[in-house]
Image (cartoon, helix red, strand yellow):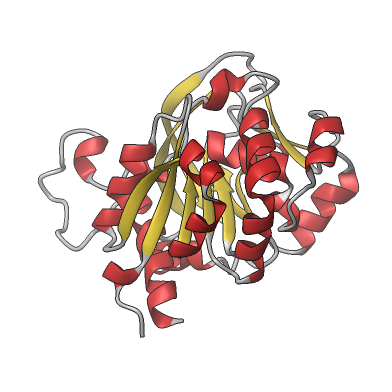
Length: 269
């Protein structure tokens, strides 16, 4: 059995990514051993990915969102690391993409299909030709606020196991994005995602116009997850504000449970 300290997490860093330290801290609190790795370091040595058990794509504005949020990051990942990422998926290693990372996973094709697109496909695809994309919020502006979220009862993703055990269905996490509205290429793509129980989280209030109120998705295996809310920004109660005096000591912030869930899963696998 693997101990949590032996679970090594690759937390991606690079131009415009700005949540890598928060994400690494979240995994460290969960008991894993995170390492912040710059994209260029992986490009120079793609096989370095094999040293890790979890891959995390944090939030931010990778490459300043040129050509669309997550697009250039996705192009670089598939061009220089495509073979290693395919190998990663074949070995059923978990991946999480948060906010900009979620956008990149959709651009890559890893969400919702779990299969990475080729560099040629990525260069010819546009916003509405990928099965799932993250478009501009329906209100047309950047949003930075705490939002109530609904857990999907159907999802069997190991990233959500402790959330389901410890919460009745409604949780809160911060959101901060300008392009977070989930859109589908065709109605059939949406139907397929729903039929395969790939919705992980839904907004209780559909403030950005996402299809079916979707805030987070998984691939069919549940091992790849992407979400617009920031779980790494809610792994301690101080991140939200003053701690309630009557707060029970055994209550764990919702964001922290996401990271603990996948660590427990790998320990037990």
